[in-house]
Image 1 (cartoon, rainbow, N blue to C red):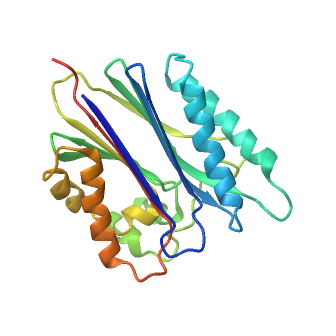
Image 2 (cartoon, one colour):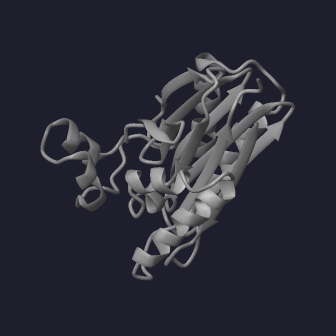
Length: 241
């Protein structure tokens, strides 16, 4: 069983520089969420380029492994670098999920996150590449305090930031009989929805789109009309018996 849903909003900004792309074909799934940086529309170009290139690379049914992901990310990074100009140093964060043969691999750059829930409980969350995350690792603040840290928007890895790109890559088997739920989202989403609330809302639903609806309802009650773009995608997975 596979169920996928996605949502993206400009929030309180004049335009939406987030992008989301999904591929669900031939029992293979790919989900990409990207948060463009650079303003004046350049961030949207970068995030859309990343989402489109990754999904298109996934389509030909090449075997997905860490080397494949690294190669694809290098290609996207070069494409974003090639699109930069003196007036537009566009960049984008990215989090990607690939599922095939009862196995999931995910990779990320920056502070767009992947959350993995097993039977309704949070099992894993990616570690941000950000100045505020470094403050957590050094013991200056707690992980929960990232949401309010003055440097929370300063990312340390992104497509277009350096000549070389180094995503964090992780994976897990999905044929254990458990119910697996994945949430991919930009910082404009996770800043307003707490992990415990993600679990609570997950426990109420049977469909990915309804899970997103519950969490978006929470978010929209908390924003002040000046909030960042927010984007999320959810994938539910349970291996066939």
